[in-house]
Length: 358
Image (cartoon, rainbow, N blue to C red):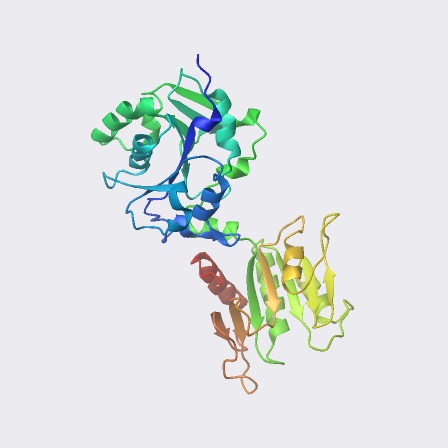
């Protein structure tokens, strides 16, 4: 048996899928201000070869990475990930290639480094197992399996799992490692992407006395009825606020908010259970960050006010008081006094799951 060094592994990112269930290119979805593909390229930057498998050479703008990233386009179309793996093995300078799907934003260099300890001359495929399930789209493939893979492609057998029995496969249980299972998360649908972006942030906006607080409380109760958790941030222009009974923040607590925040131009108040050592910072972005540190992360953050912000908004209008829109786009919906909270919440979720990000 011959030991293999981790430096002899190339990285190949499969970014040529159709993303039919998502409705848009998954590799270009963003998390933490970067696209999934950008995150992966940066994560694996320490490896001396990174290949990006695409349907079309012009599918992505990767010139900024220079020679560090090599783009390889499909030659056989409509063949799924098998073709991307074939192209990666054919083009890589190393015998071993770590394959990662581009829809896995939490994938880290730790996995190929961990698999490197198992590499030897006895196997062609090194396949992680998570809870007993094989993970072929984050595994190490060896050039020696190319003939078997090409034969399978020629036969029209596109199911990747069929390859496992045709080559020498080493199954590696992740239960025996210190690797976080989160790295194996892939994002296929709008709902999965919305969950990844949790908490979803939107505003309830409108002019003074239009009924914003009443709307926030109604949406809080509707969310609670659906088993969802919300936090609320309120802007106060008078710099005078407490959490006493009958105040807005008190009403938010009574309606089920897991955290209540209020801020003015000079100060802020936060009411909620933060983990020990959690940091406090400036508002309103700082309050959002505080909420994201909650042990029980909410599904939604509702901001009352901020009609000119870039966040999506539910605009509250009131006949005889505010019948003309005053909110800056994007606006999820505009509603008058006779609204139905259930219908408004459904509009919010339609907007959320359609991935209309700000």
